[in-house]
Length: 296
Ligand code: GLN
Image: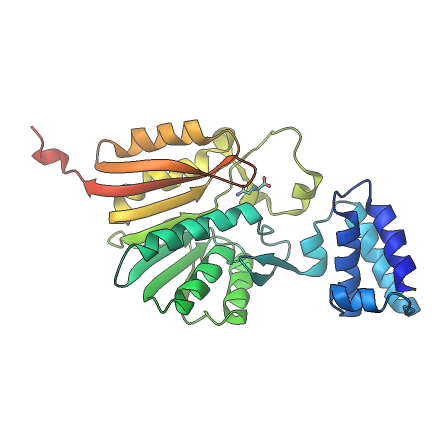
C-alpha cells in the first residue's frame, strides 16, 4: 500500500534527512507520476511490484545522500520548476535573492536593459529573471554563460520550458573570456563557486554536485575576485553587479571591491541578508567611472 511504502521510506530516511517524510513523498511522486495530494488520496491503493522496487531503489540512493532534486530531476526556484541533473548545482532558495535584487534594480530604470549571468548552471537565475521581465513587458538583452557545455544544455532546456529561449543568448565562456571587450552591461549577476576547498562540516550532499560549481581557491574567494576585477571593463556607468557569497565572506569581498574599484570608479556597495540572517549577496552600483589621467 502507498501509505505503508511512504511510512517505510520516511523512517529509512530519518537519519539522513531533516525532511524525511517530504523526501519520501517526492520520490513516490516521481515513481507514480502523481502529485503529493494525489498520493494522499491514493493512500490505500497498492503499488505494483515494479513501482515498489523502483521506489526502494530511489530511497536507497537518497539514503546515500544523493540530493533529492537529482533523484526527481527537478527543483522549484522562484516559482518555476527547473530541470536539474548532476551537471548543475541544485538551485538554492537563497539564490532567489539575486533575482529579487535584479528586479528591484531594473524596476527603477527605463528602457532596454543589458543583463549578463555568469556561471548560469541550470539557468535558474537567467530564466526566472527573463520570465519575470517578460511578464512585466520589459525590454532586455540577456546573455548567460557557463564554461561547462553540459550545464549549458540544461540551461537551454529550462529556457525552452519556460518560454524564454529566444530571449537569452547562451554562450560557452570561462567567466568573461568570450565576452567582447567593448560590451558593457547594466546588470551583471552571478552565483559563482565560493566554497573553500578544504572546508570542514560540509553537507554530504555536496559530494554529488559539480565540483566546478562549488569550490574556489583562496579560501573560496578566487572566482568572486576574478569577477570583481573585471567590473570596471564590463559594467556600464550606473550598472549593478550582484553576486552570491558564502557565509563569513562579506568582509573579505568588500575589501576586494574597495581595492579593485576605488582607483577607477565611484561606486557604492553593500550586502543583502538571506532568510537565515546571513550576508549572502554582495552588490556594487557603479556610479561613475573616473579617468585617472584627468586627475591632478
Ligand atoms: N550555497 C552552496 C552551498 O550549499 C554553494 C553554492 C556556491 O558555491 N555557489 O554551500
